[in-house]
Length: 88
Figure: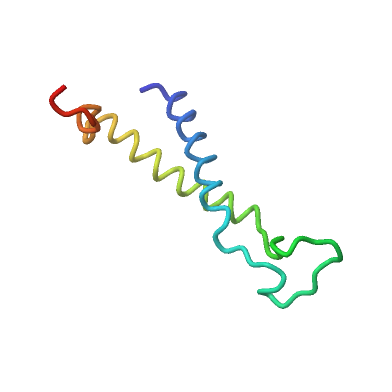
């Protein structure tokens, strides 16, 4: 596998990880007891930390990419293992 392919796979896993991790650890103003700005949505986050989200996404994407590359090298799960049409 080319190193450029590994980088592309990592980027895809990073974006997916960021979206999956987005709702975790975020609290609303009501949950934190902070006063809202007039016109603000009730669901708006009060403690959104993009740096922490990016770090968590980097770590999760690195683990997922490593598992993907190791599976590519050692062939733990093959396309035949994922076949839904057994016997066809």
